[in-house]
Length: 119
Image: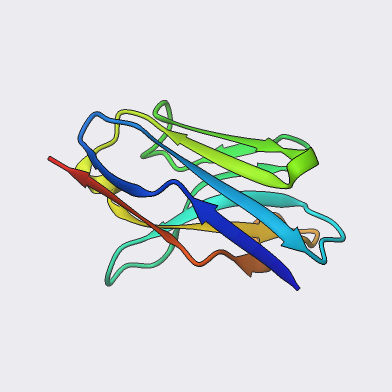
């Protein structure tokens, strides 16, 4: 079993910054990709950013230029630096880990951390 523990969410004013962290532990045999998704009430969970073991990175168009994803392979940890935050970034952010061949297939989810951006 794999556990993903997130930290770093909170309340921030528009234009501010937050940094999310997610540490993976447990029976980790391989990691293809780690990333962040977000969800608001009544909407589907959407990809925010993902980084693969080969350092290929994908961002949602809405966060390009504002968010940066990075990882520390030695610590099995992924980070999301969020700058120039907007009220529409308000959501529950979930850490995700893909261990199979397809980076877009999530095998494990974190518990979620709330990010609230006030206007």
